[in-house]
Length: 104
Image (cartoon, rainbow, N blue to C red; front, side, top):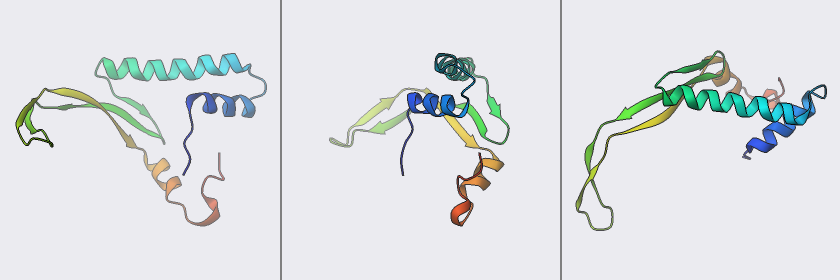
């Protein structure tokens, strides 16, 4: 299993779209990520049909345990990002054989 960095994503998109300058692809990708982050910061949900939905979930304050000492520790309430895959993406990931990843 490999991973892809933001710069690798930009490079791949630029290669697949030679009519666009790489700096424009970089601006587009950064703008998309910034808008998703801003929406989540406002508490909004971002749905990309066929791909998935980004949302935030609130974790209530609780009493936790320090794993080293076993003493009780107060854990503050926090908001965490959450991603739920869309049906089409799930189906694509679960294809069998050599079909996986062949469709763009």
